[in-house]
Image (cartoon, rainbow over all chains, first blue to last red; front, side, top):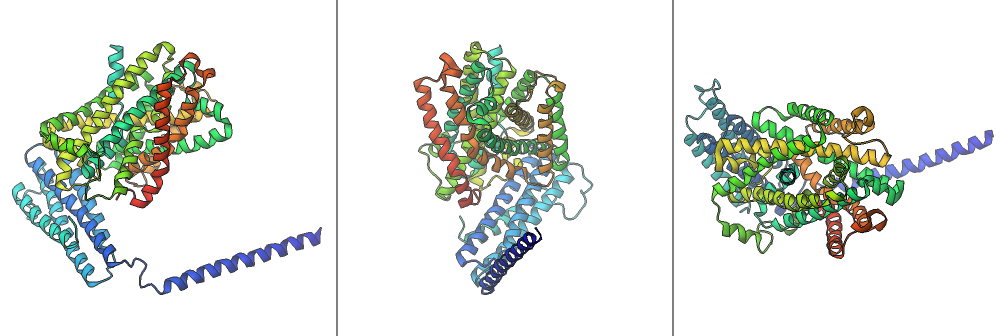
Amino acid sequence: MHGGRVGTTRRGAARSVVVASVLTATLTGTLTATAGCTVASHQEPGQATAAVADALAEARSAAQATRITVEQLSRGRLTGPVADTALLDQLRALDDAELALTTLVPPDATSSDQRSTGLSAVGDVTDVVVRAREWTAARSGGDLAGADAVPPTADALLADLATATGAVDDALAAAGGP
Amino acid sequence: MGAALGILTAIGGFVDIGDLVTNAVVGSRFGLSLVWVVVLGVVGICRFANMSGRVAAVSGRATFEIIRERLGPRAAGANLVASFAINLLTLTAEIGGIALALHLASSVEPRLWIPVAGLAVWLVLWRVKFDVMENVAGLLGLLLIGFAVALFLLGPDWGELLRQAVPPSPPANEHPAAYWYYAVALFGAAMTPYEVFFFSSGAVEERWTAKDLATNRVNVLIGFPLGGMLSVTIAACAAVVLLPAGIEVSSLSQIVLPVAQAGGVMLLAVVLVGIVAATFGAALETALSSGYSLAQYMGWSWGKFRRPAHAARFHLTMIVAVLLGVGILMTSVDPVTVTEMSVVFSAVALPLTYVPILVVANDPQYMGRYVNGRVVNALGTVYLVIVVVAALAAIPLMIATGAGS
């Protein structure tokens, strides 16, 4: 009885040693294999350019949705809450686009430049959408009417948006987008 | 009057958050080049719902009672686990859809609306009679016809829309894998399994007999195709306004922009009420389907025609399902993403309900003289192949395309 328990314990200990050895070998192998990599998210130049183009296409989509929202609100065809929600959704989309660009590790100078230009363009669109939300709030009776950041008219806002969208289009074209 | 009400309810009840989001996403990216999938899905759901309604009316038993009887407890149990999980995912998407629609109308954070939506769903399930619940949600869902009105007001180039639809092919700027991924998603959205659980159990709830089969056939064969046309108008609105502007739909607010552009605040309000009603009705149906499937498998007392005290475990299952749905959404997961996942996994789960129904509809022991005819069986076999191919292709396509991105 006692001897049987000792036998079980020995078998258990031997199994633990085998499991520990396998885990050690796996971890060591993984670390050795990844030691040669520069960073975990390293990409080929073509992949990086495609990732920049995807992010910029998302930003362009948000900019266009903002344009329609502002146009419809200025014509009285949208309610304030719907416009505000729509603009908030575009800010989230722009946030996703910016995150995709900031977390990208460019493998060469070309894609690095594309990323920098893209980040700047996305930032410009984000600024205009933020101001569009302020304009919407001011239109809906918010106490922002005198604030400097609030565009005086929809036309002024749409002009700023067109400029920012143009920069996104240029960056997108440079990254091989449509 | 009764027949008209049934048809109107079938039209209004056809569209849910899965149809709404998937059709708008597809319209904004692929134009009308995937409209053939809606046609395929509508014909399929007509056959599927008609067959399951007939089985329930003739045999007096609902889907999961039959599945357990034919497949045995172990295989039916595996089927139940998979079906229940997909149904829960769909319920989560529908509750999220209600919250998103209310968020859009009010600009109040959706996380504040989620518990309200869950509570409202439970209250209706607890207190409101089956036929009232079904008819009110279906009729208010008809307000989604606002998308069709918007399409006409937009004055599109109809020839261009037709060119997008025929012959069907992926746009030059889209990868074919993404095109087929959305084809599967659209098919899953049109033929979600919960519709069959609800339809067959509803037939038992309303005490259908063989005499009701003609009415059932008319409701399904007229109501669902018209509901499918409503889905196409959602895609068409997106194709007319969002596609040329390069807007890829990622939120509910983008889906209603063409409506505002076409019809202004009034039409927008009508459509928003329609979206709330459609998603609310679908949330009721999916919550009921959770209770139906588990109670029928376990042999518990079930049905809204019984007082909650007499079908306590059935009602408890629905409460737990609604709480789980609310809990999942409160983790801040994006309801639109949940919706996109739910339609794809619906396609994966389709054979689990389709095959047993097809087998029983051919069994003279259950169906007597109402067994499937040759034409229905031929069509049923064609759909069996389509359903299996869609189920097998769904996950590989999802992985290959990064969920269509």
